[in-house]
Image 1 (tube, rainbow, N blue to C red):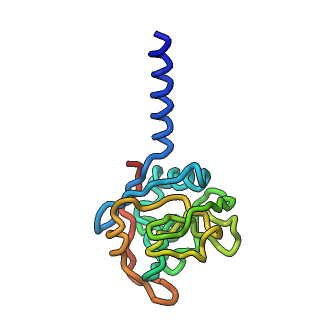
Image 2: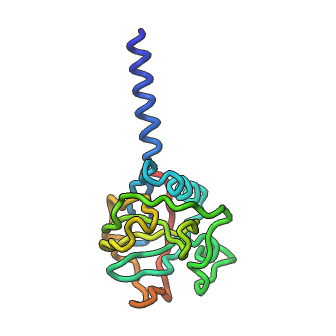
Length: 183
């Protein structure tokens, strides 16, 4: 009986650990993208990302800055949500959520193809809701931006996101997130 109890504790512990590691599904027009999160590396960024996703804040948000060969940026839930009365494409990228900014959580995660990282201003502690996905390696961002996840399935759909101006990345008619939820 005692060993059955211990087995239950171990099993419950494993289930709890898996729930912390829950993957996310990013639905795009082109297909579904599976994202693995790294709560052990950037717990506050993962928590914020999941909180905004589960409350539907990312649904309808445009990819306002997309630079071919570099990254696709999205997540401005204030001005970038095409379903909101506050939507303003010319201001997309300047807003965030109503939640406070996050302190930087720089990690040893390299900014390689498929990495999710928190977008921010020049202030390292200014990340809020915006994030970007790398199209290719960007080592100049390593330990300068808070990487917190990676695309593990569907990167071909990320590659299909409409690209913006080669210099600014601004996208006149941007793609948007259909939905973003836990798997």
